[in-house]
Image (tube, rainbow, N blue to C red; front, side, top):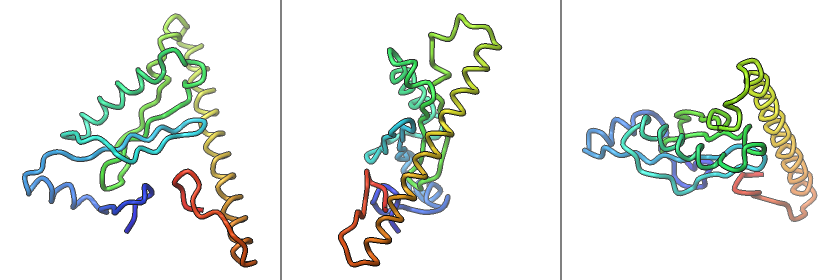
Length: 155
């Protein structure tokens, strides 16, 4: 079975237990950036556990949002393990230092706007993918060339 990254994926929580029994204490974690365009991490990082992966993602978030606060507030880092299980989601908004001077009410408003913008971008991405799949299906049915993959995603 292939993962969305195009490589062999181990499915199920048994893989983690199997690695632990074999004395392999490190797991590979992938840090996918979700935002306006997104980035799928295909190489990953070996870390000892989920907590270490979350700490790594928090450091990444703090670095990513620095000097690009307005455009990166709604971005997320999705942490996946080698079993392709979603471990955690880190919101970059939590590391936006430009919002520290605002009142709690203003921060809540910005958080709500960020959530809506993220949801809108996610819906737009899904709509574009559906359109591409439909175009590929029509082209395939007519015996014409069509797009198979777009930015690593099957069409």
